[in-house]
Image 1 (cartoon, rainbow, N blue to C red):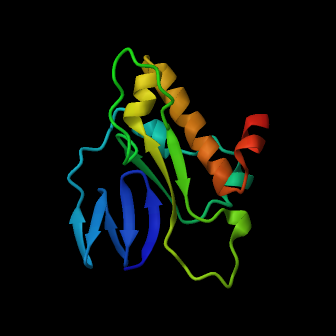
Image 2: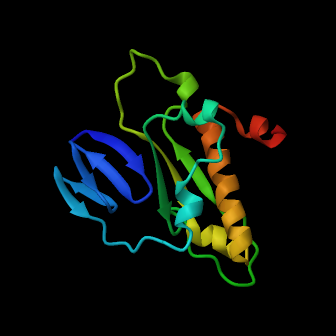
Length: 151
């Protein structure tokens, strides 16, 4: 199966457009049974405010929203902990080579429940979604944590 295009709430695979998240299991395409968060859809999916020079260089990157990282227990009220807000998976654009074997699309995962646990108001959540997405896109462009702190 060839995944051709991604946007929040839309995936094109093998020429078919799906308006929902997918699970591909043994070659069969199924609708993902997790309720998407429409509350923050605008914040997660739209990169229009990025300068064109950056937008035009983003290729084949999926933006996914999950509740929590796979190995994390849900945050407990009253317990301060460092929570992972997002992560970039893939080969940075600066490290890709024409000779690389394709390994699938790069993707950024934003952890909605962690962001909501740290930022109490909807305005702060929207701002942090954007900040986290920009941070992870920095990794896509090959920037280290140290370089991102300086930006």
